[in-house]
Amino acid sequence: MLSELVYLSFRSTDCTDDDVQKILEEARQFNGKQDITGVLIYSKDKFLQVLEGEQDNILALYEKIKLDERHDRALMVSNRPITERHFPSWQMAEKAINTDDYAFLSAMDTEEQAQFKALLNGENQSNATKMIARLFA
Image 1 (tube, rainbow, N blue to C red):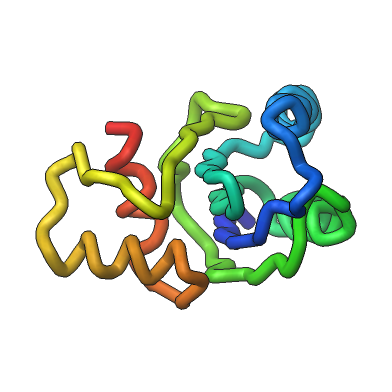
Image 2 (cartoon, rainbow, N blue to C red; image 1 turned 90 degrees about the horizontal axis):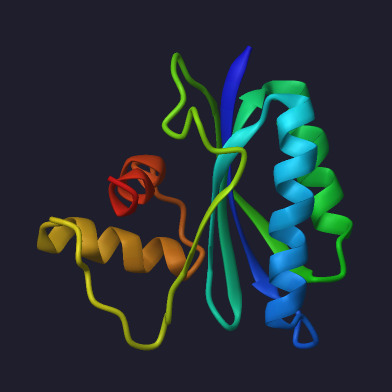
């Protein structure tokens, strides 16, 4: 069953920018073999990721991520069946953000901006994927 999983984790204090690039390289190779697509949004202290693929594959990957020392305190925000992918051509897209000071360049209303900020703080949001997809539109 095609599913999407969204999680938030804290970036471990010893996770460097080079480590993030390694995560992305590993993800692109692994995800291509497992037919997993998605996006990783990261800052100096957090990761927010959307994973799309077969339910068993993305759950297994999430379990692997929880054990990865570059991540700390992974929190599953959502896990649900989907009928189509939001990121069909990306084994792993990425975007770096500054969570202390960022502007919304995509057209988001005030309520959506508040929801996105809440999502970055680890709060469960039902429209998470739609908001994240708009960053890449």
